[in-house]
Image (tube, rainbow, N blue to C red; front, side):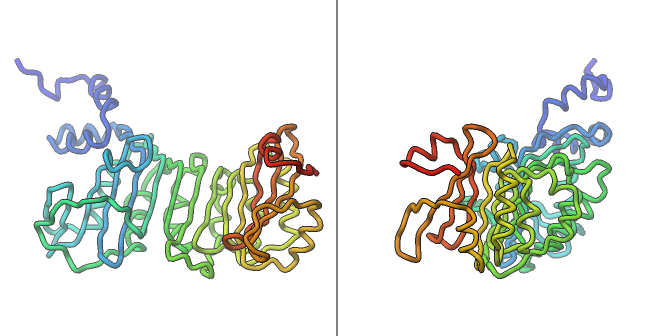
Length: 359
């Protein structure tokens, strides 16, 4: 007599699910009600490495990419699903397939699919990217059904992600790296508070419009525990408040942009870094530095490096860190914008370009 699925012991079924990834689990759950209910009850880990949610507002293109290659987003291994409004329902595009779901909202449909993928309390995502400038994916399969004229809205997508996927979870989603394209703290707060603060190690806020006068407020983000556990924090294409320079001094790798810096804050940062064993790099791009000369004098001897013109140059100063072979190199550069960079280097590295004075 043929063995039925309902006859397979639960332990064996769980071992089978443990060997499957999200590409196998999702279609398996559609085979019958028994499997669907069993998968819902067991919440197997879908083994997702990366998730990209992107919406290009000028064309209305909206899709979610899933990848478990272990090397980030790889066109050869990712699964890309497009969602859009179509008549009174939803149109889903996957590879060369197009499916119309009657009386379904495209945004709700996409979030239900995503929720199923990350439903497990053990689900971990190494890389979550929320983007308004879709990646170049090369050739796209021909479209048989005409596209809708309704455009996507990135802010509404984040609202739906919060309400349908993140907020209802009992256990916060474990994400290692979060990248979000925005210059609005409100959009960041739709996602960040619902991620596991112990697991999240990197936050990158970027703005491809590159408006360096657009301020991203950080007051609500600073109230969260997440910032205390970051190993990397990056802001590009926009600026954050000037007074955050000293509040980020505990983060090993930090790249930020501000409107103005001052000597007092940078000297404080220098002293913290000298005693921080996990330190790697801290770069500050700025527009104004009123007391620059005071900072240069307070940091002693500077060695001039690359010089393109009297206005475009860089120079470095070196300080002994607590570890005998670790040197703090401070670089002031006007080559490509104005910036101050603190970097941890080895003694061999800094002395390879000729004699230097270590203070």
